[in-house]
Structure formats: structure tokens, C-alpha cells
Image 1 (cartoon, helix red, strand yellow):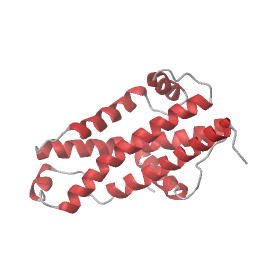
Image 2 (cartoon, one colour):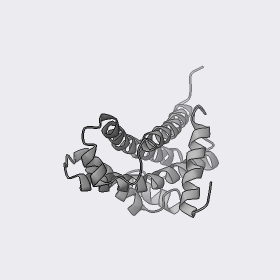
Image 3 (cartoon, one colour):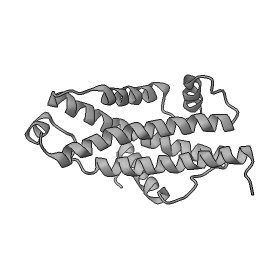
Image 4 (cartoon, rainbow, N blue to C red):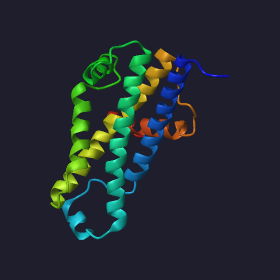
Length: 186
């Protein structure tokens, strides 16, 4: 049976929701490979440590992928909810009003950090450490926004991830971040 156009669009959002969960899972896994916070001394003494720098590269890539995927899904969900999507700022404002995003500014802060990572080829180990420590902090914002967005999609659109392969791990990661934000033991 051929899907209707609307069903196809809903299925696409369900696939994006699954991709968000997968992005969180793999970003968290890469982040767990490092001892935080990173320091300039550590990076300088370990400057030839391929495992360390591959984990850092993965964090850069996966942070960007999570924000890109979340942004695409948010725009797509707005279309399904008949909300304005003519500018991404309107999409962000909508999700700020619904409580999915902490603020448009926090999203833009994540975006700026992501863009700096994509274009920065710095060799100053203090700046590199600062960048990754900032990403580590901002990751919580993305995880919690992703959780609120998935909740919004389920409650308002009746759409959940296409497959639940990453759902359990996603919920555990988010629960840990929420406990960290609230200063509570897990």
C-alpha cells in the first residue's frame, strides 16, 4: 500500500526522531572516552595520542550532527503542525515559546560553538581545551532540548521515533543530564 503524502511526511519525522536519539547515544559514547575537563597540559603532553584526538574529532562531528538533525526535525515538525517555517528564527522562536528550547540564544550559542569547531584549526592547546570544555557544557542543552522535542512530537503530533532501538539509552542519558542539571544524585 502506498503511503499518502501526509503519512510519508510523518514517517520522515519519525526517522529524524530516531536519528536524534542515535546522535545523542553516539555523542555521549564519545564524550565518555575523555576525562573532563580537558586541560592544555594534557593536550600538549598527549599531542600524538591518536585515540584522544580521534575521540575529540568525533565529539566535534557528533555535536554538529546532533544540532543539524535536531534543527531539521524541528523545521519538519513545524510544517506538520502548520507553524510558520519561512525563517529558521521563527522555528526557533516557536520552540522557545513551547518550552522545547531554553532560549533562541542558547541554540545560537550552540550553533556558534559548532561553527567555530568546523573552521578552527588552532594549535593553542589552551584554546582547544576551552573549546571542548564548552562543547561538553553545551551538550547538556542539546540533550535536554532533544528530549523536550521528542516529547512535543509525541504529545502534539502523535509521532515517535520510527524504531525504538536507541530509546532506552536515550532516556537514560537524558535522565542523567537532568539529574546533573538539578544537582541530584542518579
